[in-house]
Image (cartoon, helix red, strand yellow):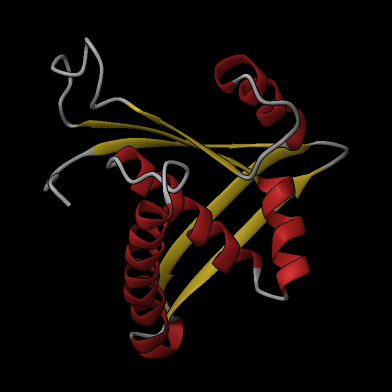
Length: 149
C-alpha cells in the first residue's frame, strides 16, 4: 500500500476518553469505535515520513459491537485496527459510495490474509483484558500455538 516500512501507534481507550478525543478533534459528540490520525499528510509530514500515524480504538465500543454481531472480541478488534490503518493510507468511506466500497474491499482482503494466517498456521490470538472499574490495560499477543511444535 505504498509503505514498505512504517510505524504507527495504537491507542486503546475507554468510551469516555475516545468521546473526548472525538469532540476535540472531529467536533462530534459521543464515543466512536475507531479514530485515525494520519501523519503522512500536512505541513510536517516530511519530518518523519515513515510515521503513518495513530489509530485510536475504544475497547468498550469494540466489545459491545462484537457482542452485538456475535463475533469474538479479537475479530472485532482486528476489523477496527485494519479500518484505522486504511484511513492512515488515505482510504475514506465518508466521502462517497465508491470510496466506501473500495475501502470495504481492501479491508476484507487484509482481514482474510490476517485471519487466514492465524487459522492456517495454528496461530492464536490471546487477549488479556485487565480492568477494575475502568479499562486499565489491554494486551494483544499473537504467538505460535504450542501445539505446532
